[in-house]
Length: 179
Image (tube, rainbow, N blue to C red; front, top):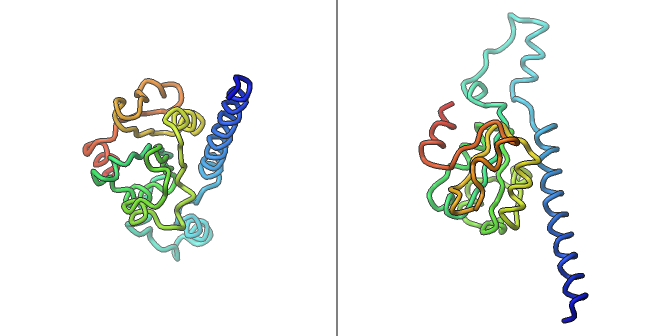
């Protein structure tokens, strides 16, 4: 293959990767800015006109958080038992970035924990560098990452882009679900 053909192929691959990252970032941005609001929003609006007839908030509604979080999920995280369904339930504004080893949505643990109606909250990343760019664009309140030796993304790589970063561990997930 000639040098110019290799250069053209490289540019085409870079353009395709940039397009995928941009589409993922745009989807996440749309979700973060106009995603589902709190389930008790209608009840609150109705309760403002007549406070005596307003139904009390259910425990399920009180446990939901409006905090925007982004979790970079690897195959190892799924096999270790990361409770994705609980995270998605507790955090309606959570977005899951799928690592390159999970680009296929047919992973059995992913299919079991994420209903088809929630697939819009999954962003497929074909490289860890692409995942880093999506995380920077999202600017989440909390970014949860696998260990740096797995993904090559250090906690300080997101210092100016996420309010808080944590390594995914049993303790950090327990704290997140308990909050």
